[in-house]
Each structure stands twice: as structure tokens, then as C-alpha cells.
Image (cartoon, rainbow, N blue to C red; front, side):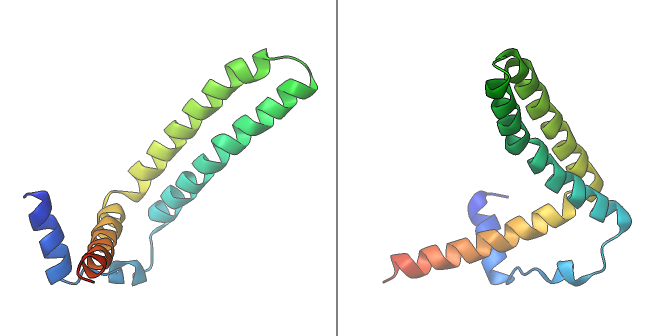
Length: 110
């Protein structure tokens, strides 16, 4: 399926977010929590390590801790994606494609 077919079907079938009305399972909730937690582990934690590194005048804290923390945040994000599955990601991206293309087409036809 080409990209154009994907966009066309998303618009013609009026892709929506109705699947999110279903009650999520514990696994999906745990996955979404892990994804959210990965963002907290990412840049905010690295910023904290940078501040700590400056306060203690020890650049090795952020030199080693930064990449390790960032790598850990990626692993937590991937684990969250594994738990929550791709189903909701595809539903959301299809809806986002429809909305974006409708706005783009409306703007281009002005």
C-alpha cells in the first residue's frame, strides 16, 4: 500500500479515535505508564545530572551518567511500546494523518 493510498483511506474512512473509548487493560496502562516514565528518565534526569555535576565540580557524573540514563530511558520506552502494543499507535497515527491532510488540503485550496 503506497503512502497516498494510506492517506486516501484514512480520509475516506473518516479515521477516528473511537477505539480509545474501550476500557484499557492493565497491560496497556502499564505500557502507557512506562512510556510516560521514560520521558521523565530522559532529559529531566540528564539535566539533573548536569546540575549535580556542576555543583560538585565533577564532569564525570554527567559524562557517564548522561548516556547511561538516556539509554535506560530508551529501553523503558521500548518496553512500554511492547506492553501497550502497536494497535493504539496505528489508530492514533491514522487519525493524525487524516486531520493533518485535511488541514493541509484546506490550506492549499484557499
